[in-house]
Image (cartoon, rainbow, N blue to C red; front, side, top):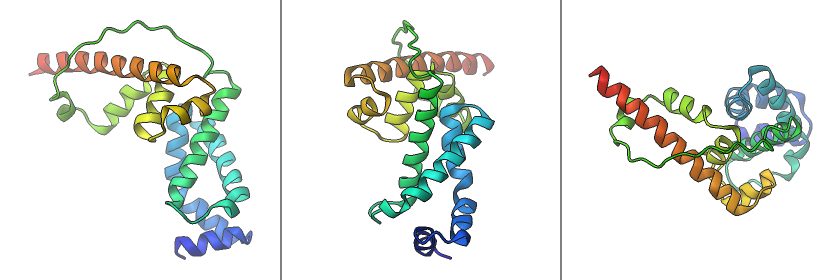
Length: 180
């Protein structure tokens, strides 16, 4: 079955098509959910909620743009909705970070997993704004609507996230220099 057949089947409430959709995209969407909620069991719950919304809203998919991107957007929104429910988003942490310059070679030394681990270590709200803007490509206006914050606040959290990552990268660079 190709993706267009699966979509059509899901729009007609065909269980076989729904099963195929879940089978094909569970891994990718679960990793999106896990990235935001940072808990395996919670990510599974958010994933299930995401698929429920996908199946109920699949008739609204216009066919424009990537279907996977459309589903990913739903998974991100479900993850944020979950975080809002448990009031993690509303915890604002004040971190004074100093801006420092770091060596670009650090990127050559870090694996994708190490970079993701650094991002995951950011304070919750900073990580969310950073991920939505840098990884997902949302504008600050869209982020402000998703998180119910001001556009300027979104920009501020992104700046804090970048400074925190720079600091972490500098520390990694120092550790790498000492290992050489």
